[in-house]
Length: 425
Image 1 (cartoon, rainbow, N blue to C red):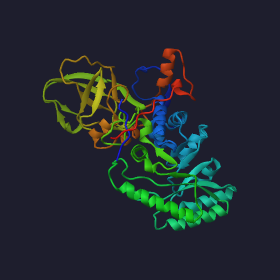
Image 2: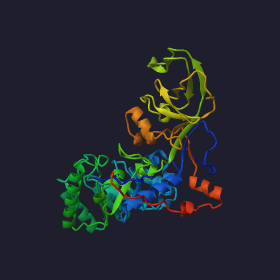
Image 3: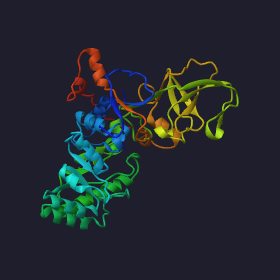
Image 4: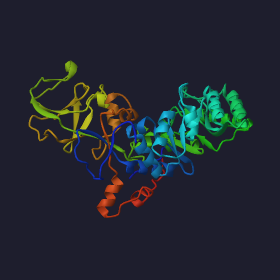
């Protein structure tokens, strides 16, 4: 199995700043670069063409700001946008985004009528079909739906045993003009582990589900299966469209491939400034529980981000970047702060110095914090709290200002990203 590689407005506060390579210091900020999102969409699109690209902007655009992420993804060439909940999709419509939208995770409180009115496609796993049909009938307007088959993930989606009945109902409602079946989709369970045979099993079930759908006269235009790891490692799962998430934000879904390996650029830099520096003697305990004691006289820096801001409380010896050097956290992360051992008693680190938690030119990735906390990069970027403002700094615009050629949104940096070579892992 090969992995393609490259060798070489929201509920959270979002501030647009003039484009600069290094925004002025803030107490704490997640600096979002739309240019990176555009680049990553173009990169992924080059891997999967001629398949269309749906960019998942659920969970506030994986923590980057849903509207910011959506606009950048569309500028980068995304064909569709996806959200888990209809409520998330409605936020995008309110912001004026009119691109094709799919929402797939519903409860009995989901406003299906609003989705139909706002031209939001709906994922259907089973029980929802009757509610969606009733909403369509009340509006005298057909709902656009995508039927989801559970091919082995065991979450949402219709089982293969119940699939024929769902198809029968979909065909019946479609004949009555209440539904239009636009797609059939599923979700992969282990595509981030390309050598596992379960992906082959899932694709076999999916193809069988398509055959059953055709027997019920349901042949939609959009067959979609692949997520970010599937987009990179399983060309046979591309079909008509891929649904990508974490890769769009510049992170690798693979344990043995970095974002750089895949030709991706992280779109978030989490940064703050040093809140305090002090010298301590040998044996000084650090933070709640005194789980760490220093083994020599040293200096400590206090970092004003904590688990209320999304820093994992369980992170141990996590990296940070201060004044061009990498340091490690010590002791437990508290609600608002954590401590870094500067490694020596005499230090040039001062209060107010910039701190990068991950991203930017630090060389620290969200995956590094994931490793320190026993989790994955997906969780690290999506858990950054509302107390951390999102500051949008477009590096394409900064480059344009520097060269006197300011790019337009329709043509970011006025040049497409080079197509990375395809090659074996």
